[in-house]
Image (cartoon, rainbow, N blue to C red; front, side):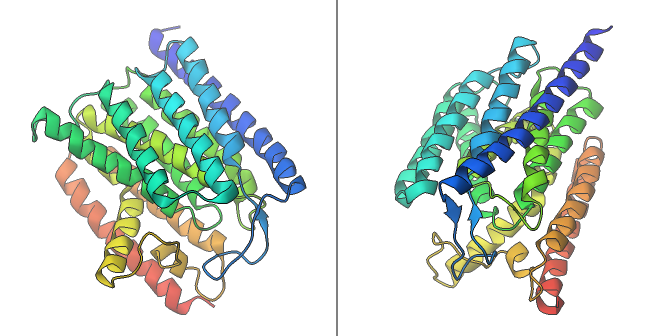
Length: 337
């Protein structure tokens, strides 16, 4: 068996184990959370109508962390994985405290920023912007993008299935792109595949109608890890695929935030104004919206693969696809019955 085949076998085996751990762990978390009435009760801005246990991240994040540890033991984990997993677990612990009782927004944001700053101090990858910026400015800009990604990953976790679909799509995309480009030598693709497996295990319980929600304890650490993997991908020269894979999430969250700022709203408060939230329409069909997002994610994965050879045309087409998709969500918001 060649070294490449050994790495592929190890990555696949770990991904299967992570899926099982995430699926089984989420089932246990569901029972434990329900027995202690740790639930998300619907309020005016909620997209659900009945109380649902919240905190599946208590199972999903440890399952991914265990997978990362297994990859490290097998010699197929990316450099710096110990620090990244440690920071993700720390963010998960802080976010769990927030899920239970609420923490000041400033404290949460400062913790997210500190985690990104610490991780960047030990950055193992190449320049994110490929020499277009001085090295110090490259780190600053990359850190700001990473921090925004952590925040938007939390913002976008607002309907059944959406985070599971997005994380699985990103993970699969970040496993395929390096393999096709021939730069899969540092184990980042194996970790991305494990993240996709963890998301799919959770998605079995979170598909509409969801039996359990991820909670900040899951969405914040996942955003941290997935953002790191995207920056690693960009540091390998694959900046266009790294931008295309999360392009829908980036567009929805960023345009919604800018719109709220322009309207002088308290943009840091929870709301129901994202494109995907409005797309629920009057029928409230979370599954229909999640399937639409899965569809655009599949297209973005295909474009990311094409961007390996033709980055600028793929990016231009990706912008058109996402703009059309946002218009489709708006159409559903107005016409769904």
